[in-house]
Structures are given as structure tokens and as C-alpha cells.
Image (cartoon, rainbow, N blue to C red; front, side):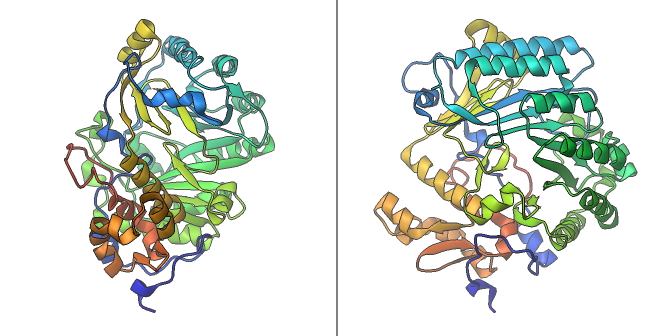
Length: 472
């Protein structure tokens, strides 16, 4: 069958990988936003929490459900590949005083946010388990005094953890605090690759933590892997994938390593001679994805896989999948409050982000109780394009009838320029359309970012000089 005439993919992702040539992958492998938001964060402009007039956080008073994100930037050692906002330190006092500021910032939201139940809470970093058990408990108790935190499996409390430093006692504490999802940063099990990026972690450590978390009742365990790291090749990555499948995590994120040493100082410590070529990276992603899908993992699109019985895969099958700054999620809330340095919040009216540096964050909290430095107020066209892009990223299709209902125009009339941008993807069988839908084909799952980018009016307008990660 001609790929361009391929029928729309079903809501339930296929278990088989379509034929993808290296040439096709290379054609769309360039830099592109990840679309955890629209507009993307590089478009944000200066904002202040003390500014007058309507601001995006004013909409918090009307929310019915809420997500919380807390950024914990501290790590004990430097991983050379990392592009996160982090601080490498063994001075624990920095973390303790940082929590004081996070809880002060949370107080700023007391009068601004409705007493809406928190359906999601995520601790990210850095390494959130850098915090000792006492401070983890202090953080959750402080948040519980301000926000409506509820226990149970109908809410999702997740935390990112470094398996090299996570202790069994901390797993006990996390479960007692209500955490039910654990994300472990694995990256790669090959010792030579681990040495090249300064992150030594054995499969035995990961197995012990995985089994310990399951025994304690964590309902979902996910692993983060990276391909394109220095010293990797197809054979070594396949060995890592085999070891991972033996441990059977519920979810796997397979990220592409973006080498941007001009932006991320730590990456300058990597020997560039060891970084795989673009063609080798493509071969690695093909091999790893094929191994995962053959083992029964559902390819959700982009770089995420899940076991068929995992709630995320079920949400994808039932068109309930959503997307935010933590990636794919199944519990979308009306708003997100982000606490800590560099954290981003959103409401139906827009986005706002805190100062990036710890020094500026602490100074702002001490001065005014919040640390907002930039953001974006959504206009009606932004909201429409935000919906379109998230429909593609999460459900792989756009209902033309819904577009007509929202705009009063046919899809073809409202988005003629975007359809023109998609013509190469139509020709390659990556997107298609029927009378009722524009859809991403099974082959096109790999290129969701490219399809979404066609609807990004800012990407095709004034340039900001921003650099995005590569699709492959």
C-alpha cells in the first residue's frame, strides 16, 4: 500500500515498527522543539509577579485540579552529558536553606491558588533524593499546609532518583509520604560509556532498587536511557536494552543525547572523538526501538515506551494522554505550579518561569516572596495552536470538525500555510489526511515534533537564535 495513502493509526499504538530507512530518518533528524509547551520557553519575555494588569497566574483562582512541580537542583557529582539546571555540591546546608526558600515561595501561592486537589506532584532536578529523609518529610509537610495534597492511587506523586545514591530507607520514607512512581536515571550500563560521562552505575544496583520499590508498593517504575553518548555503538546499546528488559520497568524514556558544549559547560569534558556519528545514532535508535517493541513495549511516540498494562499506554489507547513539562502524562490538571529555581508554571492563560540561578532565585524570594522573571500571556491564536500541537503530540490526529467549530473556517482555509509546510511529510508517508482528520501515520510517530512544528507560528516567524535538540 502506498504510504501516503496509509490509513490513520488507531488510538492504540502498534506493536510493530514500520520500515524506516536511514535516509528517511536523516532527512528529519535536525533540531526541533520538543513541545512540552506552546509557545516554547525560548519565546518567553520578561514578567514580574508584582506587575500590574492581568497576568497568567491570576487564572489559578479558578482551577479545579492542580499539578505541583518542585525543582531540586543539587547533585553530589557531575554527569558530563547533563543539560539540567543543577548545582554540584557536598555542602548539604545549601539544600536545606534552598528548601526554606521553596516553602516561602509556596506561601506566595496560598492566596492565589484555589484550594484545588493536587492530582500530580513531581520532584525533579538535579537529584531530588539528594535531600535527606528529614528534609523530604519537611518539604511534603510544608506543601501540605498550603496545597490540598491527597493520598491514594488516584493521584500521582513521582520523583526522579539517581540509583547510585538512593537508599532503601529513603524508599520507605517516599512511600510513607505518598510517592507511588519512581523514575531512575540509568542512561547506559556499558562501563566504558559510563566512564566517558562520569556516571558509574551497575545493573545490580538498579535491580535491587527496582525490586525494593516494587516490594514497597510503587505502582510505576520508569528508566531513563540515552543514545548517542560517547563510546556507544549499536552492540553496546543493545546489551543495555537487554539488561533493562530483564528488569522490566513499566516505562522507558529513550532520549537522544544533544551535544551542545557552547551552552552546557559540563559537556566540554566529553571527548568529542568518542561521540557517535549521526548515522550511527540513527542506527542505535532503530535497533533499540525495535528491541523494545519486539519485547512488547508500546511505542507512544517521540522517545517514550510503556508496557501495555501500564496506565500511560492505556491512556494512549483511550485518547487520554496529555503532555506537560515532565513529558507524557495521564493526569492533566487545570494548572501547574512550579516551585524552585528555573521552575515553569502554567495556567489556561499562559506560562511563567522563575529565575534560573540559585543566587537570583534566593534574592527574589527574600525580596518579594516569588521569583518570576519571564513568561507568556496566551492570546486566542496561541490557545488554538497549543491545542493543535498537543493533539498531534498526544493523539496523533487533528479533528478537522473541531477546528471548524473553534475557528468558523474549514481546516484547509484556516491552516493552508501549515498544510504547505507539511507537504514533504505527506510525500514521505509520515502524515496523511481524510475528509475528517489530519493524522500522523505509523511511520510518522518518529517525527511528531516535525509535524507539530508546522503549526508553530513563532518558529516560522521572527527567529530568537534558540537552539533545539535534534529529533534523532
